[in-house]
Amino acid sequence: MRADAVRGHLDGLLLAVLEPGPLHGYAIIAAVQRRSGGALELRTGTIYPALQRLERLGLLRSTWDAVGERRRRCYELTDAGRRSLADERSAWQEFTQAIGSVLNPGAPGLTP
Image (cartoon, rainbow, N blue to C red):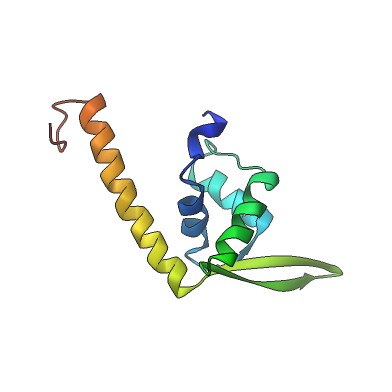
């Protein structure tokens, strides 16, 4: 899949994989890859700035977690993040239905 395929959808992807509970950066990358069946591979240089931006917006909060002698930052959704994820899902449904209607006219379940 093209690397730019997630452009415009990265926030929703990050919020969705954090919905079940807190994760650190590499676990977030692994969750996206696992949930996409290996089709999406995010880079650390892509997700960390996005995670920091989402935290500044109040959609995530982070805490430091110690694993042995190493520390890592874990991110989790805030209530505002959960609302934003619901909005992202709704917008995604509208988007995919509109694009599907154009690419597959007359397909079952799609309005022309």
